[in-house]
Length: 453
Image (cartoon, rainbow, N blue to C red; front, side, top):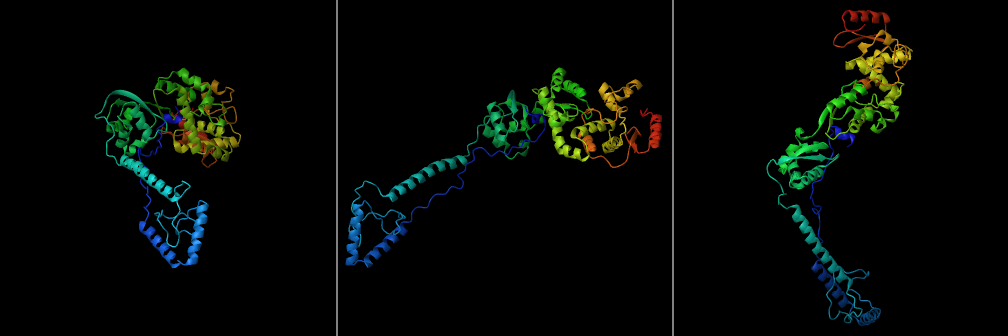
């Protein structure tokens, strides 16, 4: 199963109606115009009479004898040597000349053979074309069951399946009596184009109309819906997935330990943290750990394309991976979307001025604890993730950020901010470039019991 099997992505399938004919614009040749042929013969005869003089008669006899000797038979009324429009009936004598000698070669005139071929083609065209047209306009109804059906059967709509392919699947599982009946019932129903790939529970021997209604009912789709919030770490994501599905945690952990099979971008440094995009996913009972985690990475890749992550990272002077690290810190620091670009600005200003970031969430990530559980001893730990004692970014993302945090890191707000302090329970922060203002705001935060100590 591909990554798209786990998303509600609209299936593009414009399928031509089955059984349509291409004979709608066929044309038949007009029959020869006998009057025109007769007119040509009259003109020819008249010309022969006008030149019926002795010298011309002798010349005509001489030419006819020479052509007869060479096996040539001349058709009348064609000075350019072209075939006549229609075969001329053979006469006993020709005016102004001798009677036509018999054809001793045993060959039939080519004009007659062509005429017979045209007639045969017309007859065949009428026969087969007529059969096709009759089939096209046949009013015989397609085989169909009646009623809502009985029992239960699982069917799978393949990835990228057209309406015709779905009809074949249903007919092959005896859900409907014929694929054509399903196509007829689905005709004109635009909702059929929204059928997603995956497993569906249908009933046996349903009427085509009932089958269309059931497969469009979300309750018929066999899937589980799992949700991963923004800011979850890989470890917490795997635990949540195991809880929401029947897949053992060990299966997810084994896949996470070999992330190269998940379609990570080449600049991921082989790390999975940051790339399990937080969202709601539809998974089927047959989904595997590889498929689910692969779908999450695929969704991250889609977001990276939508945000033009690589090009915009270069615009802020960072690599795509470094932007993802910043995005994960932004994700951990604020909850209000409008503040994400402000936190990113504080981070970039501190990096530019070689000031330690002082974001405790980075150390909490390494220790596997919440930020509120950090002790004084832990804060003094010498670690690449301790951004109080180390200048620069931590070595990896510290969570899986959502798109708003990624955009915030790619589009930092303008300003010279170096500090931010929580102001109220609604999650609003004060952003400032003044250390004294920062200290005053921090004291107010502590007094309000907002956890700024």
